[in-house]
Structure formats: C-alpha cells, structure tokens
Image (cartoon, rainbow, N blue to C red; front, side, top):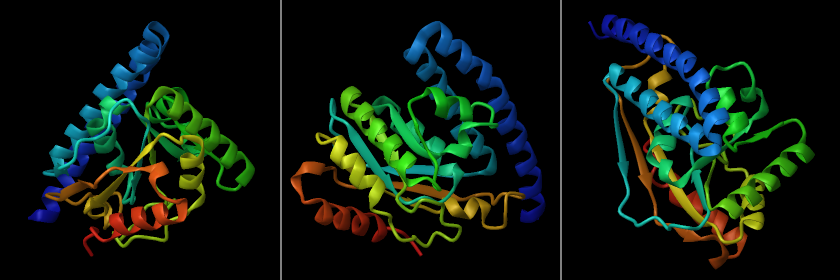
Length: 244
C-alpha cells in the first residue's frame, strides 16, 4: 500500500513542483526588472516557501533546531553537509532574512526554469569544477560581495551530495577562500539529516513520510581561530551530529 501511495503522491508532487518552477520564472523576471534586487528577492522568497510546501505533499516533515541567536548585520558563512536538491529550498526559506546565496556548479546556471535564473541574478557563485582558476576567482568575488552586503553564503564542502547520508570528505579550498575574503564573517555550522532518504530509491517514486532535520550549531567568529583549527572544528561539529 505504501509503495502505491508513494507513486501517487510523487506524481502530484512533481506536478506542483514543475508547474511552480514554470510559474516563478517569469515572476522572477518581472520582480528583477521592476524592483531590482529587492523585487527579485521577494519573489524568490515566496518561491522557496512554495517549494517547501510542496514537500508536505509527500508527508515530509521539516524541523529546524536552533538554540542560538544568529549574529545580525555581519556576513554569515553557512557550512553544511549536503544530502540532495531537497535541502536547498528549506535552507533558503529558513535563512531568508539573511539573504542566503549559494556556491553552485556552473551547469546549474542554464536550462532549469526559475532555478537557473535565480542563480544568475540572485548573487550566487557559479563555478567550473574543471577550472580551478575560474572557481577561485568566482569565490573571491562572491566572498567580497557577501562581506560588503553582510549577506549569508552557503557552502557544501563535500562538493556533491551524499546519496546514503554518510558524509564525504570536506574540501578545504572553498571555505578557506570565503574566510579570507569575508574576514568579518561568522561561521554557522549546519547538520542535515534524512534528506537523502527522499531519493534513496531514485527520483521516482520519492519516499514518503520522511522527517528531515536541520540542526544549527553555535556560531563561530571566523577570525577567532587559525583557519586549520576553524576548519577542523566546523567539520567535526557538523559530522558528529549526522545520523547513520
């Protein structure tokens, strides 16, 4: 019975998901051209709220745990493990007041309604994984943008999503560059659990009734530690809370 229900709900989910992407693409264009950055962000915030709501069709529960006061009027660097595309919209929605911007592979900047437009016009860093020079230059520019505007950068040091929930090795270069060129930033370690289970059997059908959790850890002023110590502390903090 569960597998039949998962097929039915997955069809309904994808219908609402893709219709939403098609709808919000021209709305983003209007928001950007009529209202500039603020107009575009307003539409993107609504879109992310909508995409989070779509997950409820699958019986998904989403819980954020945050016992800390997040710093305001300073740049933030949200560092997280990565378990799939479905952890993007909840992060964007929850941290919307902090203007979250993502580091993403350049291939995502074309061909995906709404998503590609937002990446190109919303302040994201699009990097070419095969071109280290381009990647570093893009992240430097991104870090300076975050520092200047006091926005939040979101980085997944694993590089690619974990298909089993088991964390991969964290790469040091991206975070090191962000910290260097956004020196007043605070690091926000974030642990994601169970998001990978939505697609543990592939993209269709999606798993129903999953409980995705986002655990926010204590903010760390980036300049308070040597980078090597900072990196080790952030990685260990995130990974120790990942549920096997």
